[in-house]
Amino acid sequence: MSGTSTLAPPKPTGLRSEIVVFGLVGLAGYITDVGIFNLLRYAGEPGLLEHKPLTAKIISVTVAMLVTYVGNRHWTWRGRSQDKQHREVVLFVIFNVIGMGISVACLGVSHYLFGFTSPLADNIAANGFGLVLGTVFRFWAYRTHVFAEERVAA
Image (tube, rainbow, N blue to C red; front, top):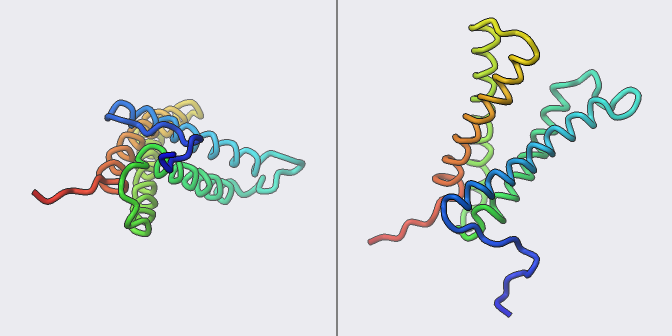
């Protein structure tokens, strides 16, 4: 036996594979976020956090961040060094907050600067443009800073 688990997903090889796996991990995080948010707000009569949407969102994003950290650490970039996990987690959280800020900024510009205030416009700005730009930023940040490859001295 080689010492690796037969249940582990295959290690991504190449940039294209990393992007696909990163997207799958992100999809799992998105489903987690939306699912928990809606369960906290609307499951039951009344929902546990029906009148506390911000609290529900903070909880759902936090759980989704845990899902995406574990997915990216143990699948997307599992072959990279794990020597500095404390630093890795701190950077992961910081870059997630920045990525969320990108999405919120897109929403703010659309809603307040351009005056597009319909629910559809808000969703396109935050969950369309904001999500795409934030995801591109996160992929770059995770790949180059959080789960960076060890540099070998020449």
